[in-house]
Image (spheres, rainbow, N blue to C red):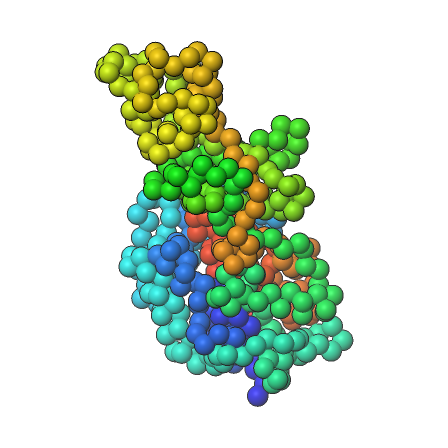
Length: 411
């Protein structure tokens, strides 16, 4: 059978791309290698589905870094307001509980996936499950169709939305990159992003019970200016072998490329809301004035979980049960420093198995940002994570998936 449009990949970008294509009256085929659609979308935001956020277009674009400008046309064509209207038209109500992040009111990702599937069926999109994408059919640099699971499917327009390498158990194989590379597309270096990080220090395993809010992480390599500018702020959780949490997810996408170059990347954690050591000293002395009987551990517990305080005290050889006045002066100085700026060394990560997204992909230089069409192969289009675009936590990547899918699906 010959189709007007073939969409390869039933993730967020592929789903909306197929819907937009079918709405314009095109006979549309959606190819998926798994036995269901939207598997990664179902896992998004801990299955709560953080769809997007309310940033203005310019700020949204800047959040994506060096390739951010490439998003401009897609985001202008289909921004978060358009996404809300689109989902509402499918019966999915949304809300913005914190004034920034957009969720379905159910806070359940299957609400969104179910609605998209109903719309695909209403529009008579042909969905083929358990079909593995094997190759493109190209003649004279013009797309003619695809090969999947030893079958040939013909079409004058193909949209590749097969995603990156993150969450391999959800269908990310990366074979599409090899196929596209074979057909002269450039694939930039691929790195896992948004995942826990492994530290050299083992004391972190004793601090796993609590979430610490509004932690700032910075790279501590003063001599390398490019690296030393990397920082992130958000909630942090210590793990049995490192750190995780929203702040780590954002931070990881910036430093994973450098872990290939350096044996380890030293970082500093700003764990409290105090700006500097002087502020900490004032806090300690004021707390002592209010209650002279408190130990240093009990004082600092007002700032951080006691498990963290004990470990930091151990690092500077202080008994946390001592009163502040009983601690030697040079040890007090060490304590002040380590509380305000806690050093760690990042030595690794959990790889693509635990990565939410991929950093890298098809070079944006080879894609027309106004249409998402390949500049190398006519009538071949791309959308979503397969492109060398990745953003921070907070709905950025899903919005990009929806926006690029919408744009690629248009006639």
